[in-house]
Amino acid sequence: MTVDTSQFTNGLYIYVGDKLFEILWFQHHKPGKGGAIMRTKLRDLSNGATIEKTFRAGEKFASPAVSRSKASYLYEAGENLVFMDTQTYEQYEIRKDILADRMKFLVEGMEVMVVKVDDSVLTVELPPSVEVEVEYTEQGVKGDTVSNVQKPAVLKNGLEIKVPLFVKTGDIIKVDTRTGKYVERV
Image 1 (tube, rainbow, N blue to C red):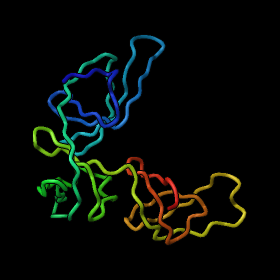
Image 2: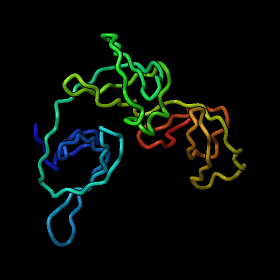
Image 3: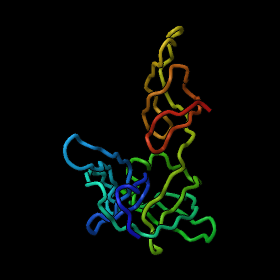
Image 4: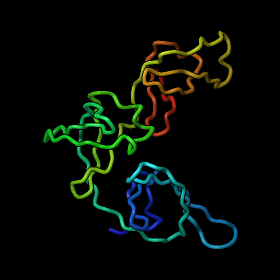
């Protein structure tokens, strides 16, 4: 299947040269002079590296037929993570560097989507948000709620994020897995 830059969406898989990439972010840009361009942030699925690349508007790319299946995260095995398909009970091993910073959100038993091309596993898509306990954060100052002030908090998974002043140590909060930002208190 072929796609051009007007069909870009977050999460689309495309071949650039002979390498397979996932589109993480894109922006159409029309400079005052010359043709329109598409700015993108891409994840290289062979090594997990993130790059920024610019394409001319209308440029065409090959896009593989992708299949997704529900799986459950089981455990860490050296440099790999082990997942099990919830329908067939087949187990998949995926290198840690493919998930990169998203690995911090994985919890044993978490349901994820395994993405495959021609029966070979490409990557794992996490749920849009996860619930995590706040391990430590400073107390908010009473009366300091006039503006949207945020303070640092360390979560159980080791991630440090900014949270609103009313969040306390021990609270369970929802965190966006794509951006790593606070969503709401549970």
